[in-house]
Length: 106
Image (cartoon, rainbow, N blue to C red; front, top):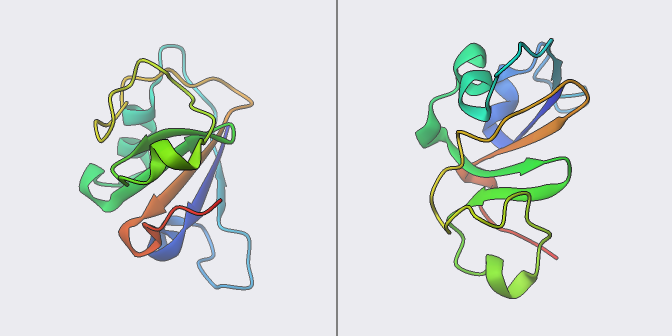
């Protein structure tokens, strides 16, 4: 699994410099979820503004999200509710955006 960090969350990357890749590669254990990955990385849920799983929006509190028509990773996840219980697997890509990157764009 690859975890990509954006904004101030880049500090969780092995090398947080702006000219470096802000990615951590992890082995995924059976039954692992988004929440367990965040805990393993030391990221507090309140630091997260948006989560993307495999390029699809998983979690956001941005009120513009419905009008931007992002592909959703989980249709059953209510708006502005963290979908921490979403399972992850090897090969998944998780994009984590901090509050300094809270603007969603088309």
